[in-house]
Length: 148
View 1: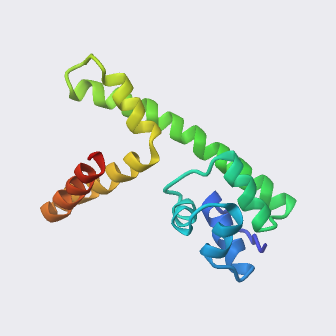
View 2: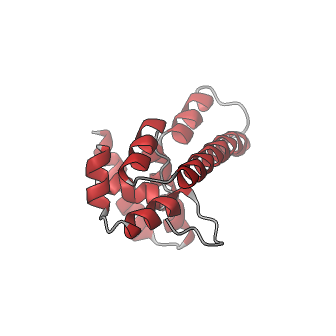
View 3: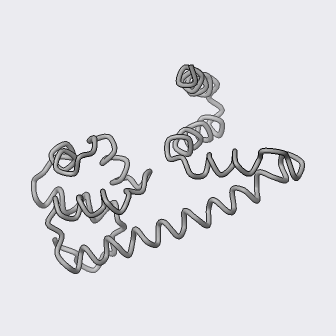
């Protein structure tokens, strides 16, 4: 893989190597036992791969020792950042809801630990920032349907 002077994040390492090998997301995903959608989320760093999946990705892309090390280090840093973000999220939600609320910690922990919920909240936050009520309603409708 051509690493030049630019430093790549874990998603960029995957994308660049996949492109250099002339592989599609579907081809890599099939070799890793995940969906192409999951790989796309990983490449865009919207989702962190488990250690097992990260190992499969590294193998499927035949990452060099240097790139594998960089990939692993970037994932560790991203996991560390994610853990710090979870703590910040918990600290932010409590005051908004008026301090200690029974059952809040498990609820915030579930939100912070669930990739799908976190992604959904991200899209909801974007829709609210854009003041797009149609998008907000669409997201809430999807969540309601998933709860049934």
